[in-house]
Length: 158
Image (cartoon, rainbow, N blue to C red; front, side, top):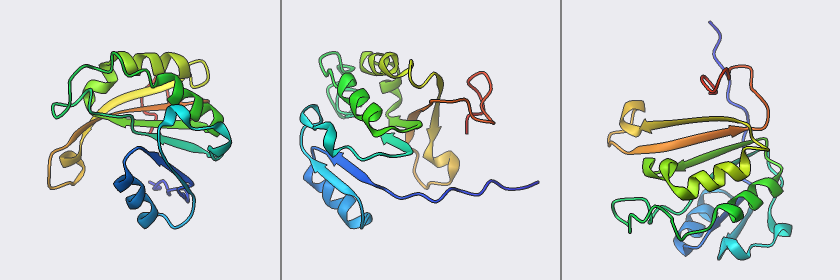
């Protein structure tokens, strides 16, 4: 049985409202751009073209450490969608606490992206189950513009 070889990847951009996150990005990735500020004000000229996009939306309104308001007043979905669509990505990975995938914010974002990314797979993964020493469950949604060879009826997209 042959093993799937990973594709070469490079981070080409990072954006956050937290200065420490931008510092971590700059220390871990020596190339690419970074944006420190409000994504709702990010001009599309500063969004790099990419093959895939990793999106980790704000979590404080969904996690037990935050307000638990489920993003009712957040309204970032259109901005996340604008950034993803401008990037030209053919695949989007969304990572967040599991409650996010049940939130109003995620449903709005999914509705905005699904005409362009009709192939969607959602799952939960506990980091402990894949080798981490600590348990940390996260929800993941992977959206594809085109059906992949291993993706049938929304299953086996990885």
